[in-house]
Amino acid sequence: MSVSATRPATIPLFRLLLCSALIVTVSMGVRHGFGLWLQPITQAQDWSRETFAMALAIQNITWGLVGIFSGMLADRFGAFRVLIGCGTLYALGLLGMAFADTPLSFALTTGVLIGMAQAGTTYPVIYGVIGRNISADRRSWAMGVAAAAGSFGQFLMVPVEGRLILELGWQQALVVLGLCSLLILPLAWGLRESALGHVTSLRQQTIAQAVREAFAYRSFQWLMAGYFVCGFQVVFIGVHMPSYLKDQGLSPEVASYALALIGLFNVVGTYAAGALGQRMSKPRILSAIYFLRAVAITIFLLVPLSPASVYVFSAFMGLLWLSTVPPTSAVIAQIFGVAHLSMLAGFAFFSHQIGSFMGVWLGGLLYDRTGSYDVVWWWCIALGIFAGLANLPVREAPINRQPLAA
Image (spheres, rainbow, N blue to C red):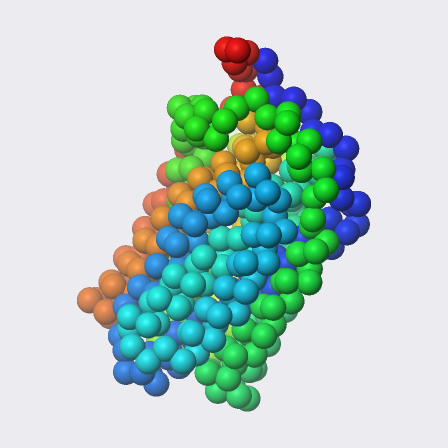
């Protein structure tokens, strides 16, 4: 028995996309600016870069791990309750990040609390709502809209965060962001799913059966391998590029503008990836993205470094930044259906976050050991080539299931 088609939307389309887009704008916009705090916090607290990087590595691995369970809860009870709880955790985590005075407290707040918050306010949960409420012929496009909103959040928030640090100091800037994160709570009301019980009644599998099926399916394994690379690349660049540029003698404003350009061009890239996914092979789109990332990083390292080269690199990387997210999630929905979409997307995203952990932590560790980020940059290139190859054999056709025994 093949995966069944999605029912008509139970949340009005405009409300669904607007609330989803604004939630992702807040949650991802705040997150994308964390690299701007690396030097202010480590200098003020007399910590190493590895200390800061370890906290963000813990954040990413917590995000990925907790995301599996937040996805299960969202599939079962709806995204609304998850968003309320995790939006509150976001505010508490940012306040804790502002006032943590030891590496342990910094790791617990910046790492664990904010990681848990992100698990319930970003793509796996939001895409689960979209997948349950948008028909398959528009699903990839809708996911592209939500991902583009997260990119717009980066473009909007990163320069704001840089200005807040300059005007208020790094601690008060985090307090302001904590208050901003509370906007997620009223927006969550727009994603209440009155017909969720009907979705539950249509499920063909238990959670355990869905997990076993996915992990035994080779295409899901390849998707997870590619997602690992995505996490490694984007989090290493997002967190360490501001310090890399400053080490090379460029001003902090160049780093702020670079991250903002990534966000601006990613609005185009993620929307285009989602829209193209309705007409083209999504695994081929993913392969192209990873190969192009490897090319872009290679050129960036080989040409003379200047503000102009940074801006060109940032714009091109922006087109590829989160453009992996809509095709990956849409492929999972197409293969397995939407009944367990938040959970399965959460498992895939956990692989992404293991890569994020490795990218941000190794960036800090190897910089402290060698005084350079060069090794990690070249790893990003090699992994990009691997991920491009890994997505080529992915099959996006719906899986054929045998009827379950009575």
